[in-house]
Length: 218
Image (cartoon, rainbow, N blue to C red; front, side):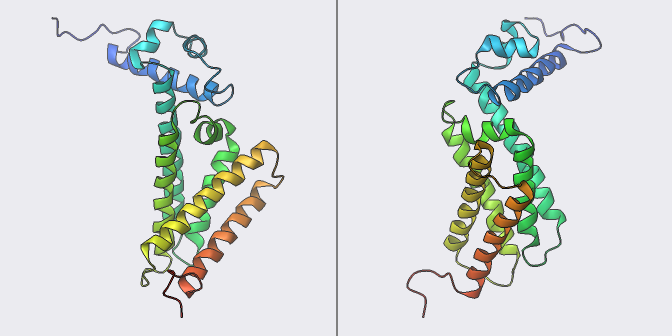
């Protein structure tokens, strides 16, 4: 078997060309899964959108489900980095970090409905429910860490912070989905204010002892 590298075309080697084709398919997946939906999108549709022949699809992916998973992970990773960076950049005063994370999360999904659909609407049809649950848990861990950092000298029960974090992430999921469905007619700036206020109120209740582990209240 030859070990010589592939020929260079247009200044790109074989691996670079394959990576470029994969990137085109990922872009096509974002465009079509995020608009037409997973069930309505086939390999030929994706290749047409990417400007590639069908054979190049299978160079990178075994099928549309694998491509959807890759697109999903890309959207989640980008969103997580943005939220984490916003939290990190915000001074640790009160619930400012929590608000920064909520604002970044909702704004990013509101600005690009394709990503909203891929994260929250299409996973069931693509057999990717587990991916969505893992992604939401990942964000919940960030919320819990952010909430704990608000008062690092105190140590609320871990399960209380977990429930708090899951309630925040669950609320954000529902409000942004219902906003885009038309059922929740609230400007995004107001939606961020409401969600940040609800989360901050819950966090203060935890630290004040108004929310405690059952059986420990006086």
